[in-house]
Image (cartoon, rainbow, N blue to C red; front, side):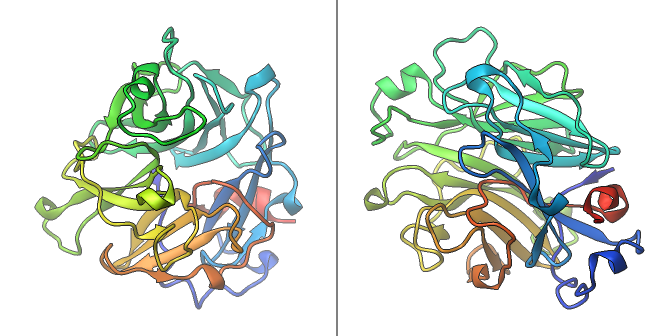
Amino acid sequence: MTVRVSSIIGYLALWATTSSAWAEDQQRDVFLLPYFLGNGETGVYFAYSHDGLNFEWVKDGKVIMPAPSWGNESLTRDPSILYRNGLFHMVWTTSWNSRSIGYSNSKELKHWSKPKKVDIWRDRTDVRNTWAPELLWDPERKEYLILWSSTTTAEFQDKDGSDDVHGYDHRSYASRTKDFQSFTKPELFYSPKDPEFSVIDPYIAHDDRNTKDTADDRWVMVIKHELRPERGGKNLRLTFSKRMQGPYETKLGPPIVGAGTKIVNQMGEGPSLFKRDKTWFLYWDAPGSKFSYCLATSPDLKTWTNRSAEMSLPAKQMRHGTVLVAPEKVVAAAINK
């Protein structure tokens, strides 16, 4: 069983009960938001919600998974979580400049396996960083897909797609695993063309296009345009493919949220995207904005409504996480106070 990021519609008016009341109902789902604070040096925190709008702390805002002791790769930034076959799997960024990612798993969110540092790039030394790994399940290949963003020496030196003063020119890369023991060699997953430019934070969701005909199905990837705002960047855009594995359209669509848009006109990054009851939900991080976290909804992936002001969050500047829905019976022990 795979539980993916899922529905809010239909729940919005139903769950205004206290934690003690809803803990007795083992059929309900809980919306989880793992996040980090500051630079990610303290570990991973969790918030939960019944309706996707009003979030509360798990464990009274205390760290759920402490940061590992891996020297200069001890951060827990950008946590991405997936629930499948009785386990929560989580990956994260270990450092600003690292060729590794972190991995851990848990049955109930309270007790996590010993964090594992995955040297995802193996013996390659031409890679500057490995940012914001996203963990997804590939139903066609029946394996886990990990997406992230990296700058290679060659990509930066060709000067064809970045204006970053720190020396980054990102593209999206992918690795696959069935057991989190062995991982495939990283491959280039996405690079925009005409023009080519830096992108980060890819996230993929399935779109049934509101029809019963599976031939109409497609996959949508939301990704951050990483150039400066004056060059059209620091916002989130979409691209599409008939298959989860791609290839995705190399020309990105127009900005939907973030800098240069009417929805939180500041830098937007770290998106989560999912669909339920013919409505799309897009969560994202907007560092420096008045919102700790942001939400927009859409019926068609074209017109979007800003819901950020409706959200209630327990902490300020909750950073880059992934919104996930999971069975309450699985997480009740962690959530109940």
